[in-house]
Image (cartoon, rainbow, N blue to C red):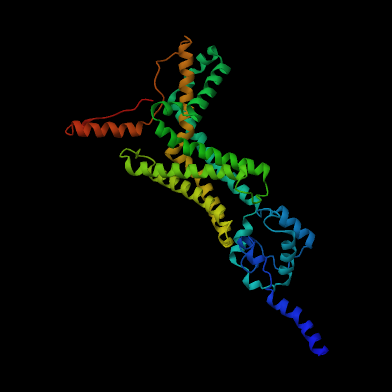
Length: 372
């Protein structure tokens, strides 16, 4: 009897152990998104049997490294990190399971991504400056130099900056003429500004890209800004479908490409955020890489689309304001006042359409010329 009782006592811990399932911390963590389903690598390196000590492993998990974001204790407890380290050391090293994606991911270091974006930004900046120089040249502003010296360069600069704020940033003229159009325009303008500001603030206050609560201001700003841009893009798409005069005869195909890229940029950014909070971790990094590619393509394509008016129009209006101020001061500007370049291609198409409707027999004989 005593032997039977002893046997049962010895069996109970075994039964309890058998009924308690083995924990799988790795399989339920976000680590799979970059390091693969079996930890043999994905877009991130293989982490089976890590070659670093536990203390160094914990430091990488908590602080992040390179493109890897920091993982706070609220997302993975200290106990789970210890268990994760044991699990990875217990896994079998299988070189044949290392995917080709790891080689691609290896190229996406923080330094390489920064270089890619720097190259895209510089290329975009070259064409932006070239475009500004072209339009300022058409406006003939160089002939204002003698008058500006008499008016005061610093005073002229103040007028120009004020115009950039009032006419460019606040879009005051559109607010006065059409508040609905102003609001839809503002969704994209301020949404893009919000996204850019969020990225700068994240670089400063959350450089490791650690996961933040949805209530954190660094989460709220990009989410609200992204939704605003998405709604604005949807409105632009509707306009492109319904406005008979949307084609300026020059950039329609490139405009479609830019709007599509902008839509995919915002959507992929939102998807990255949403999926990162689900168990579909394997999709996070591919979608994020697609997001980065769309952002780069946006930078490069923007100067070749009609959306360059986001910086061209405020500059040209600013030059107009300066010329108006100089003229109003009584200083002789030395030439006859002419309007700055506008949307002459669109105006030409509207004028030709009117002529074809009013006098179709004379439409072919009409020649329209544009003087900036």
